[in-house]
Length: 409
Ligand SMILES: CC(C)(COP(=O)([O-])OP(=O)([O-])OC[C@H]1O[C@@H](n2cnc3c(N)ncnc32)[C@H](O)[C@@H]1OP(=O)([O-])[O-])[C@@H](O)C(=O)NCCC(=O)NCCSC(=O)C[C@@](C)(O)CC(=O)[O-]
Ligand SMILES: NC(=O)C1=CN([C@@H]2O[C@H](COP(=O)(O)OP(=O)(O)OC[C@H]3O[C@@H](n4cnc5c(N)ncnc54)[C@H](OP(=O)(O)O)[C@@H]3O)[C@@H](O)[C@H]2O)C=CC1
Image 1 (cartoon, rainbow, N blue to C red):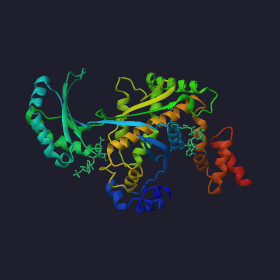
Image 2 (image 1 turned 120 degrees about the horizontal axis):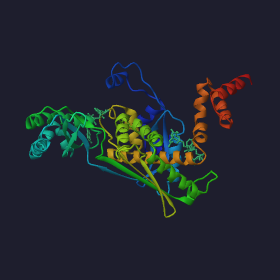
Image 3 (image 1 turned 135 degrees about the horizontal axis):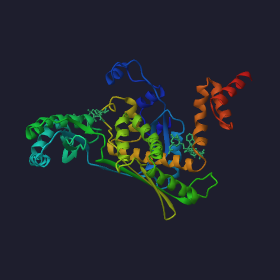
Image 4 (image 1 turned 90 degrees about the vertical axis):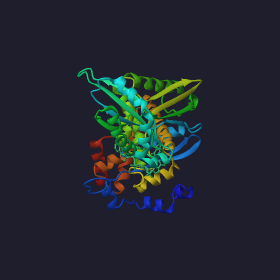
C-alpha cells in the first residue's frame, strides 16, 4: 500500500484501515451513553495539497459526493505555490459571568488588583497544563448591559493556553477552580463558568494565489472573466446572509470532513466559525478573493480550537492514524491544514458555480449513490452509474427506469 511505502502509516494502522476495524464495544460504550451500535461513514483522501511548502495528504470523512474531488481539484490549481497558513493562537476563552452587578467598575478594579492570586489559583486547578507550558495567560473584563431588564453583567474572559488539546475540559476545570476565589473577592455568585466557543483568540489565516492565465477553465468565459466572477461571487457572500450561509456551508464541507477524521468536535468548530462569520453584525462569507497583478488571490481567517490529543482523539484509533497520515503532531499544524482545506473547498465550489454550475460536477459524482438509492446491487451499480452520468436529467425516476432496463437486458 502506497501510504505504508511513504511511511505515512505503520502496519497496525494499515491493518486497521484495511480491515475496516471498528472500535471495541468497550471503547464505544465509554465514549457515549446508551450505546447500541457503531455508525460508519466513508473516509477518503484529498490529494495535491501543498501547505506551508509541505506536500500533504488529507483524510476526509464525509457522506457527500464531490467534496473530496473538489478539494483535490482546488489543491491542484494552487499546487505551484501551495497554501500558506499561519495561526495566531493565544488560547481558549473561559467565561465567568457575574450577573446583576451594581458597580461594575469597582468590581473590575477589585478583580484586576487580585489578578496574581487568580493566576496562582488557576495554576493550582490544573497544574499539568502549566507544566506543559500552558495555563492562564491573561484576563479580559467585559461589561454587558441588558437593555430590556436593565441588568448589568461583568464577564471575565480567562485566556487559557491549552497547548495541543482543544481544551474545553481543561478550561472548564480551571474556571471552576477559580470560581470560589471570584465569589469571595466580589461577594457575588457567578451565573455560570464555561468556555466560549467563539474563540477569537485561536485564529488561523490561510492564503493562496494562482496566475489567472493558469486557471483550468472548461467554460465559455475567458480566464479573466472566470476570475472576476469568482471575486464577484465572494463579494456577494459579504452582502447577503442567504448566500453567505451556503457559501460557508461549502467551506464547512471540507473543514467538517477533516474535523471528523481527526476525532475533533465538529459542533464546537461550527459554533465558533458561524459566530465569527457574524462578528460584524451581519452573517457574512468567510473568504476573500481578489485580483491583483494578474493573480487570483484567496484568503480565509477562521477561529479554530482543535486538538491533537485529548477528548475522543486519543481514544479513536482512526483519529490517531489520520493525524499520523497528515504528519501532524501539534494542534496549530492541524489548524493550518484545516484552514487551507476550507479555502480550497470554497474555491472549487465558486469556480463551478460561476461557470458550468454545481450540478454537473456534483451530480456526476452523486450518480453512484443515486444508483444505490434506487436499489442497484453488485455490477448494476457501475452500469447504472455510467448510464446516469450521460443522461440528460439525473433524478430518481430516470434512475429507476434505467435500472429496470438494465435488469431486462
Ligand atoms: C467535481 C469537480 C472537481 C470536477 O471538475 P472537473 O474540472 O470537471 O474535473 P476533472 O475531471 O478535470 O478533474 C480535475 C481534478 O479534480 C479532482 N477530481 C475530479 N474527479 C475526481 C474523482 N472522481 N475522484 C477524485 N478526484 C477527482 C482531481 O484532482 C482531478 O485532477 P486529476 O487527478 O484528474 O489530474 C468540479 O466540478 C468541482 O470542484 N465542483 C465543485 C463540487 C463541490 O463543491 N461539491 C460540494 C457539494 S455542493 C455544496 O455542498 C456546496 C455549495 C456548492 O453549495 C457551496 C457554495 O454554494 O458555495
Ligand atoms: N463547549 C464545548 O466545546 C465543550 C466541549 N467539550 C468536549 O471537551 C473535549 C476536549 O476537552 P480537552 O480539555 O481538550 O480534553 P481532555 O479533558 O481530554 O484534556 C486533554 C488532556 O490531554 C493531556 N495532554 C497530553 N498531551 C498534551 C499536550 N501536548 N497538550 C495539552 N494537553 C495534553 C492533558 O492532560 P495531562 O497534562 O494531565 O497529561 C490534558 O488534560 C472534547 O471532547 C469536547 O467535545 C466539553 C465541554 C464543552
